[in-house]
Image 1 (cartoon, helix red, strand yellow):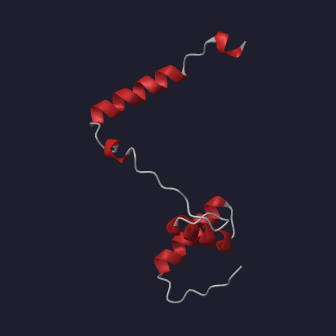
Image 2 (cartoon, one colour):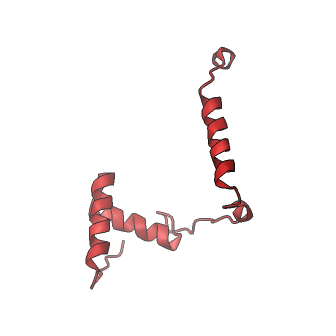
Length: 87
């Protein structure tokens, strides 16, 4: 693996990385590598991740009311347990 030095890192970026590392209980190096992989679309093995756009046209089309209704129905359906599902 290659080593990389980053200079002139803005303090707010450094703080955000430290906070993320602390929150995820990971080292700074692990956190930076993960962030770079995500930002470049590269997987840990160096392959590019596939990013799909086939559902993009559906993003953000619900009104707040429609989204709230969906969430309500979803919550209700999760609270019902059918014993037959566990046989």
